[in-house]
Length: 439
Ligand SMILES: O=C(O)CCC(=O)C(=O)O
Image 1 (cartoon, rainbow, N blue to C red):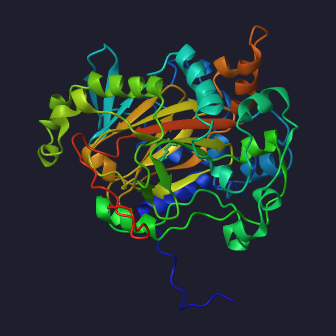
Image 2 (image 1 turned 45 degrees about the vertical axis):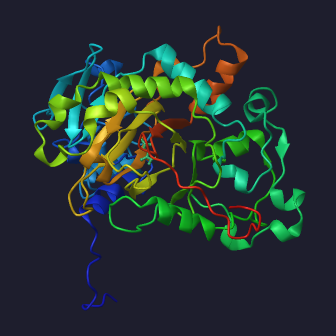
């Protein structure tokens, strides 16, 4: 019986959009893109729909738009039409009227898709995408960079080589290889990466970060996880950390060591180059609210020192959040997409404002800066069937490339780079109260 007192659930505009794109209730139907087409941004889609993996996979099919009340839809999904070829429909023309196109100094085009947020479609050529895919899974996963799975598993240092040559090699959970004292209970079982609402969208100070991490004793390995083959472990891996280590439990960086893990220099060059290519004065002189964000020096002194490589399998999502743990809240975050396309929801500093869905395709680069760093964003959907042709196996591929392509066949990789410390920031010495000989 329905209680008449029951209040309808109050979802924010951001949550409603997330729910729409996450919906997997009907396996023959994708969430409708057409429902959001007035807001949808898809800047690197091929001109011809026949060349577009999204269209070919049926993301614009009219079947996705029926709500189930129509009997012909029911007949198709549940009866007569099932198994027949799906009508792929026509892609609509998408409006770019609320965005501004900008010319970058290297000749590429970018678009201001939200305040402080610049999308550069097709930023990475195909050979760079393949190189970065390989680096993401073969190099960025190497010790000492922490991986999501390294809390619970004794991850072999040559993980990618094993994945390439011996994917059935078995990896033991730490609770079987370490003493029982170091092992946690069920509360430590691995969970999907979760972003939790903490303080309002503002930067947290250095002292607070130090204090948070002092109280953090490290995540204990769970005694519930079972052994995995290397192939299974790779599919379960959700992230690799680059540079300064981010502690998900305290939502802050661990500054206890003198030096960060070195940030990959090739990746730093790509990020610095793209930040340098933006004519920031053109962007911020038009935005009075962002004038004091410090953009004047970014071209010269942007230097990423931390980053996360996100590994998404097809069903994975990343809930809406704001990245607010870097000491300078405005410096650019450079985000690169590889593999399957995804929907990124990009909102404002309030979850109550409706976000814009952006199709991020392989090779796209999104820069978030200034007010855009305080914008809620999340990835509610990896778009099934949208792997670009250049990731398909080819006879001439070497072993490494074959393995990298095997990985991306069911995945999307996102590399995002940030700068924790603004230039010139002097870290106060860390006082260790437990050490009697330290000053
Ligand atoms: O996967 C993406 O495109 C976004 C990733 C992201 O928002 C994050 O890592 O904070």
